[in-house]
Length: 156
Image (cartoon, rainbow, N blue to C red; front, side):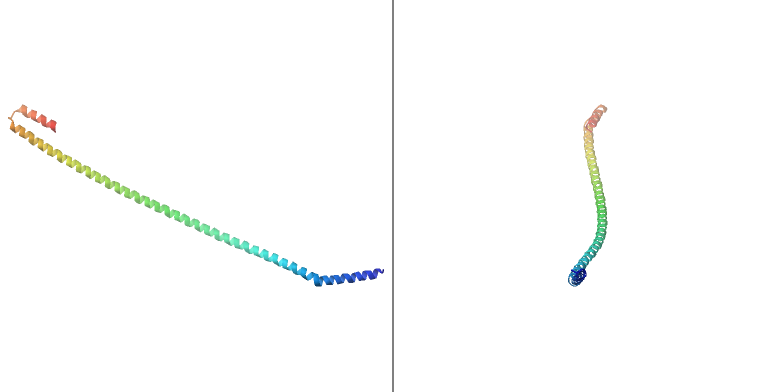
């Protein structure tokens, strides 16, 4: 066997194999690699977009939370003001009612005292008239008068 012929035949077969591989095998492999690279790039772009969307959503959520906290604080403040106002109104009404009740009680006590004085005056007048009647019916004597006046004092 001739070494040059064998080497030449092997080179020819190698070139045929290279051409065959470049024409028939390499394009589908290159296309598959390109498709895979494109899918990876699309996936990375989608991940970046999702990351940006997440950051925007986090910003919106933080803004809404801050707004909600402010609104809650405002509502609590308004509720406290309203409660304090209601308490003050209730205290004022209770104070007014207490003053009215005390005034009514004082007026009633004054009226009862006046009635008691009037009743006492009437009783004193009746007793004075009785005493005068008894003095006038009896004879005028200092000892009898003193005795009658003593009994009047005890009755009063």
